[in-house]
Each structure stands twice: as structure tokens, then as C-alpha cells.
Image 1 (cartoon, chains in turn orange, green):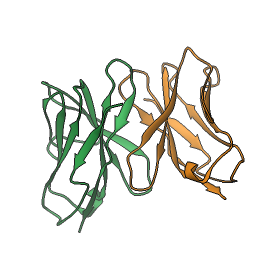
Image 2: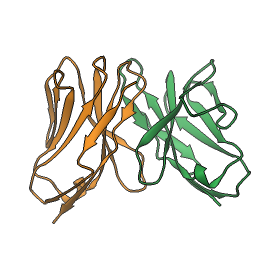
Image 3: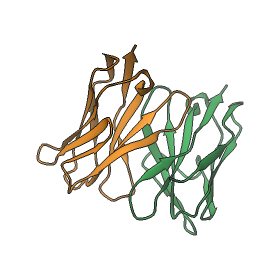
Image 4: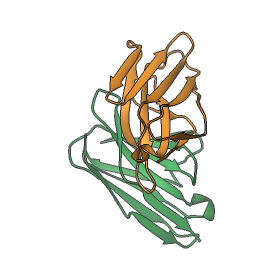
Length: 111
Length: 114
């Protein structure tokens, strides 16, 4: 079955810096790759996603890139703010139903 | 996106007892999912619940331990049966925006078993 690896496990940046989180997946049939942000005490929030027919997608300060050949995808956050501090999860799906999640990245943005 | 609520938000239970968690969504959805998130860990899918059919369980999860009901298109319950301290986790429900693969999560139920 699908396996998703995520790096780094923790990431500390200064406010205004960029942050990049990387994930690799094993199943070449996977075609949907969402990213979730989970704040303390809350459920995961879908922040951006990308499908296998697209190489890059942007939404304001966040962007996701997908390299199908290498089977990896990345989340890019620019101009980081303290409110970006949270745990971020990547996920992959090959059936538009069952999501397999990465292990999570704890992002800390210091003022 | 759908508005999803879960009850209870948290509970402390004695080992050997059972707890039923409710998930309510404000619109009709076909697919609902139940996940477990152990402390500091990622999300693991327990089962997929379609209205009108038996839930489909993932490897390592069985119906006797985690019975699920899905009586209509806006509601589902997950029961954690015969609890042990190892069941202490956050239990999350999610729904799929029909036909898109996008999943939206409820706020979670924080369960502590003593």
C-alpha cells in the first residue's frame, strides 16, 4: 500500500522567512495530494491540495509543487507569520477516498 | 466546506467501559471517515462509513472494538468498546466533498482512558 514520508519533523524559522516541507510517496498511482494544518486542540484544516495533472499551485503565501517522476511534493510558505505555527501534514490518495498521511512537521515561527 | 461537529469534545473514561462519539455534518455527504490520532502522532484511518452499508475497516481495526453506525447522510457514530489506556487518543471524523477527494475534519474527541 501507499507510504508517505515527510521531512523535516520540526522546522524553526524567523518571522518573514520562507518554510519548505517535503513529502515523498511510494504508490505511482496516487493522484491527489492535500496539505493540512493542525493547530493545538483542533482538527486538521485543509489548506491547499494538488492533483497529478498539475505541477504547481499557489494560494497567496502558500504553494505546493509536485514532481511525479520523483514521487515527491512540497509545501512552500513565504513571508511566514507567528500564526503559521502549527503541525502540518501531507497526504496522498490514489482513489479520491482513502488518504494516507505523512508523519507531520511541527513549524515554529518566531517573532 | 462543510461544518462538522463532534460530541463529546473530550472525555475521561474508566477501562473496560465504552464510549460513543457522534459526528454531525451540516450537509448531506456520501463518504464519512473515522481516524485515530495518538498523542503527538499522525492520523490513522480506522474505517470508511457509507450510508446504508457496512463500514469498511482498515487493517488492525475490527468491528467488535470500533462499531460504527451511519444511519443517514449527515450523521455517524463511532463506539470505542471495552476501552484500555492504549485507546487514549484523539478520534476524528471527516467527510468527503462528494466526487472531489477533498476531506474536511471535525474538531476531534479527546479520549483519556484511566
